[in-house]
Image 1 (tube, rainbow, N blue to C red):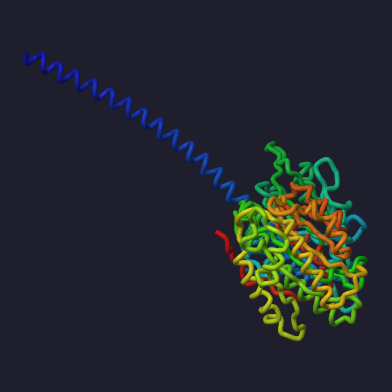
Image 2 (cartoon, rainbow, N blue to C red):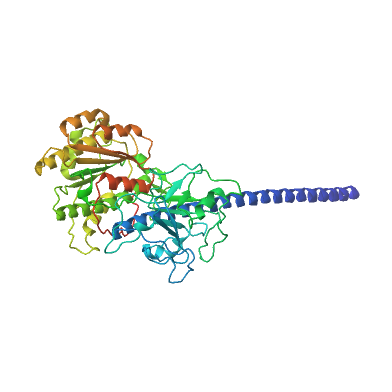
Length: 516
């Protein structure tokens, strides 16, 4: 009995040892697999973060370039791609004068009409951007190209008024990717992870010399010989021909004198911001100052706090110039609380606006005030309204447009404006959807034309997928804008508002998010 028990005991011990070894081996396999999976997802996360940093940087750079143009009447000249960190030349614009000597790390080539195009690094210090924004998420310096005539002025020269740039952006098949061949004034692009002709964050020589035989990236790094760049949404998976570049560009928005515009600027303008629940949808294309991700409503707030001061500046210029045009009034509202329901009528919305539920923004400013204080009042007023404009409920577009049309007509009568349409009144709608509560704007549009013949309705569609909204704009002589990213939205607001004239505008102190 004793021997049998001992044998059983040994047998049991050996069996348990074998099971433990198998379990340990299995555990190691599972852990190894887990490490591989975790490593894979970590790499994906890193790539996502790198791309997001690059995208946000490009948007913020374009935003700052636009404000530099507005404030200085020109674009900055490129900085040196070679200048090292912590040197006087780092991130500082060079001289784009026609008789200037080409600085090291900058390049010049003839563009579409033979005009010179300067290329180099983004002049982050000139633009007031952080030093690290000279490079993308891959630690490669962004490349900035600008038509030289737009980056230089003196007492005897002015930059062209309009889009007469010499930079071309094409797709890989050679088709022009802009509204007119080679009409871009400036462009900024990231080389991504491709090192062909790329410059490191630290500057110095290129990581690898530009190989023009590489069809796609080779076209983009030969800016010393031409001003043609290639952009595509199809990124190559071929390691022998890597192409992960991202190119950004925008219209110049160069303010022209109001008297020089073909169409008169709008007089009385009412801005209607869609504050329905869908405006809370997340966006990945966000201004750098907001961060990513953001919401549609955040982007709309971002754009309005930049456009309304510009509208104020235009009003002041018109008043000073002795122009036959009038600066008019500016109103700004979201959907009135309590109106996003069944059965809502125009009378109810109009009465609430009259009772103070809407907002008439005072956009008149004293041009003699210092720059740092002249817009404090309007910015404070705008911010006080924005913080109450958050996504909620349905989309009663029709009754709000109708009520604002009535409000503008009343304003016109109070100020004795002739109803001859010389200066149209305008309602600018920023929306992402169709009207679904109250009377439909499509039904009311004929009534608009009868009662308010000098009224135009502009639609800024922030998703670009509601073409039916275009009918409202067309029927009233307005404009339909598809604005699917922040810069397109701001461009549309400037264009719709008749922003013109040369003026100085301070950047907003911050871009707070008010909506949860």
